[in-house]
Length: 533
Ligand code: TXA
Ligand code: MG
Image 1 (cartoon, rainbow, N blue to C red):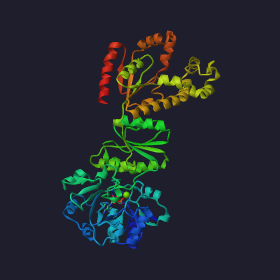
Image 2 (cartoon, rainbow, N blue to C red; image 1 turned 120 degrees about the vertical axis):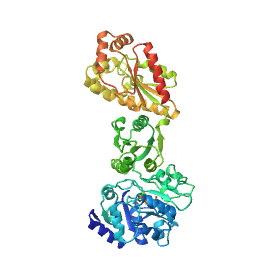
Image 3 (spheres, rainbow, N blue to C red; image 1 turned 180 degrees about the vertical axis):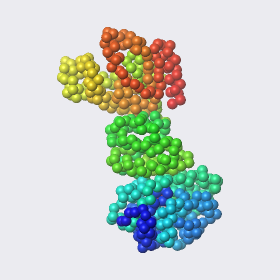
Image 4 (cartoon, rainbow, N blue to C red; image 1 turned 90 degrees about the vertical axis):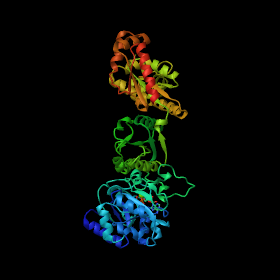
């Protein structure tokens, strides 16, 4: 296998094509695995190397509009589209000519034709002196290759590829738009960089195949065989997640914690901070930058695939313009397994320092139909789960006469320094969180809204399970008085307790609560926000 990027490599590749061999070449969309389109034996080698099912036809690539009539019967619409979008990332399906062997079209009466704009692709075709039949150069089922390292990942010497032309990173990064002009009205079978909106300007009645956005109906004959095959799929189980950043992240984090599986996330730029620290997070572009996302999604999917993850969560965006192409590829990546986080019941987190008045808010929200998940109560319930680990760190004296952890004794040794407190958290938080996510999951399945509150919320990363984080705030003196009254401790101990809590919270809403009047005002504001959720 020769790999190179210079003109001599292109010449060698064209010789290989003429000799009935297969070669990899760059295009503006993705890399192609090509052979002489008029040579059935050569084309057969593509199917073998790629592991492509024989019922999935190939695209015939040309380097001059004059070549179009050599392979198909073009109509007026074809010429109109060619004038506007060729050379470029558009493939047209037209009635085939007898010159094209059946193996190329998988026995169909129609043939897919594309005139790429990539200089090297055009050069290769013209030097070869024949149209080149080529699918995307990935092994069947894998994400399409957008750089040569992807080719070298998929193929070995044994696959019989003669030459690989390195053209660097493909500009679009996503395969061409496919439109069928065989029947009326014309129909887009695969969206791409040439958008439906652009095509509509030339063919106003163009339609979009149902399978572009939805799972193809298994009982119906597909318009394009390629639309039904499993595609673009990493090895890991993959889930597509729609919805706002906060809601999607809350859902994904819950799933990661619940499953305990090795997980990765492919998110939009700016979302990376929303996920649990144990997840591998890669971003693929700004939510509203469809071209950037299109260009990097296959590369990122391959990167995630190399990490040997159990589950990959992929953020899905909407369906306009080039985003339709991104959506179309990603729902196939996920095997149509998608979740709309905006439709899930709301999860609100209530946090705040001791004495700020979290409990009262939770009680009031319960009356509004929320299920209250009290992490303080859960922490009491689950404390003994970590008994052995705690004794190892803090000594056996923390165990009371009943054989259970004595909270007061534990507090007297654990709250003495920041280090001790951290050690305590490390042990207890995981048991608390397991309980929290199992209740959350139950609520989600029953359509019940949840509130999570408690002192450990942020520290234990439970805030990452919340779609909205509320911080309750009250003045220092107010909180001190409340603690003294509530817990029956003296001023000195209350001050000690308050001064340990030095962390800052990055919340979505600050709930001011110095007295009942302020409480009522804040509470009605919060209800307004929740109504919008
Ligand atoms: O950008 C691209 O189109 C790249 C580069 C290399 O040109 N090629 C590409 O080829 O993506 P491939 O084989 O991965 O996808 C071609 C799709 C397949 O889904 C196939 O089923 C469909 O085109 N197709 C080919 N001929 C067809 C036909 N006659 N009728 C319906 N669908 C057809
Ligand atoms: Mg392909």
